[in-house]
Length: 390
Image (tube, rainbow, N blue to C red):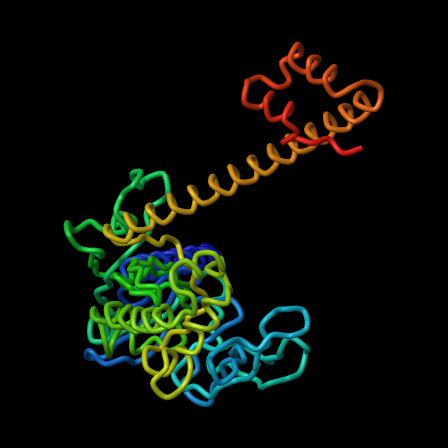
């Protein structure tokens, strides 16, 4: 009896030790790993990618025959959006074939419920779904969680940006004179924001401005980010975004003033669909080349160059003067109409008085009432230069 109890206690102690060892192994990213929600980690074998560990509800990593859902805006030959009768953009919904990619698990349907394809999980990880525990390998450190460098760039909160600050001050960095800082990481966020600064864009009306965008990305193929482009990834990605924005704004009909007045710079705006959405697709698109899908982009800040800022203020002053001038003209017109109305009324009164008295009596009365206030005018009335018709 005591032997059985001893065996049970020993087994429980052994299990507890194993759990404790696995816990610390996962915490220290050695033989196992705890993968945080909506993040991705990588197992490498001798520096080569062996597997991807993803903790994303409803999504999984698929090495072959994956299907990724996209919704591409329809455009005409000039690049303008084709809109429906409701005034909203129309879309081409489809799936594109992908390998070594993060895809939605199960059936993929469009917004109308039409089945576009199906993705099946290659692996079922019970402990991963239960508590985020992923087994790596007993052969640590030959097989291990990969560490890699990431260059960060963040937007400062509005309250942290001084009034009238240059547009560069909106970007947060721990390194002086740079717009990013590099740290060593073991995981990537599945979806992440990334600001991009586009400097000195010349519009059609010759105004020159810098534009700050906040972009939202989703990782489709993790390998290009960590293993192909490495720490150069974000700088190359930013260059693609910058080139597209410059090309779009230089051709924008009406120039800077029209772009500002249009107010199409918010989330899921015409600006995003026309200028940036198409970057996602094609053999050299963001999905295939860089492994990311640009979900959305919005203009956070736009700032004229110093010279053009002065010009813009002058233009504003000119318009204010024009408005004030129009107001004065309107005021003068109303004043003239009032004078005409009074004069007409007084003329009517004079006619009535003339009908009941002689012209000499009427002239004398006008002198006394100071309606005709100077000698010349009085003389003109007396000589008949001013006639009152009956």
